[in-house]
Length: 165
Image (spheres, rainbow, N blue to C red):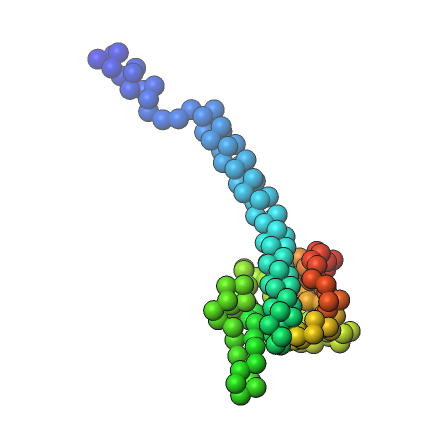
């Protein structure tokens, strides 16, 4: 009976050292996750900006190749590309994977759209001409912590760089 009681007492719980090791490991994991999440915000914004820049370059090329105008319009929840419809009103392009409407990831929003030196509201519109001679533009994206600038001289494909707040 005494041997049984001794064996049971040894398995009753965790030692202080075991508990401290578990707490230390949990602390390290929480620190690693929080550091990774902070870096993801900047990377996510850059990814959104680069995806938009590729689509804007595609729209510029599409307008040139097809001989028709295309437009890009920022919206609160995302952006869309447009082409003139039969009644001359702009209609959204839905069936082209590169130009279909897109939603912003996370907290990304358009802070400003600048065309030929004029700053428009955050929901500004860019028009790409069939001639390929477009107005220079700059689009400032913001996620609350970082900013990214997409810019083009109107002829060459747009470039992306992270901007200071």
